[in-house]
Amino acid sequence: MAVRAVRGAVQLERDESAHMHEQVGELLTAVLGRNGLTSEDLISIWFTATPDLHSDFPAAAARGIGIVDVPLICARELDVEGAMPRVVRLLAHVETGLAKAQISHVYLGAAAALRKDIAQ
Image 1 (cartoon, one colour):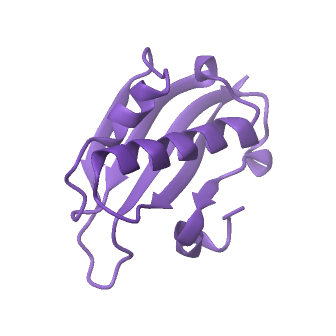
Image 2 (cartoon, rainbow, N blue to C red):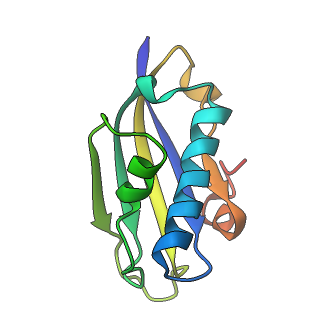
């Protein structure tokens, strides 16, 4: 098994706690599913949110879908002029047999524009 990093992002339509939980949950489910992972494979997850998101912590959404024994942390994304608004990003560290080139990074919806080079 190797330690790999998986990236992902989603743009929220609005800054509401329930919407954040839904969208971040969908992102996490997609990251796990597309990479053949379970919560047991997770080492840790870093979340960032753009400065216009205040309704909740993205990590709370992870806890809400059952990721309860994995270290999680949230941080604020840099406030860069012209950056896409209402975006939650994640960087998950995982144990997997996948090679780096086999990792599927997940950018949902409009967030796919953030990394056209790796978005699936």
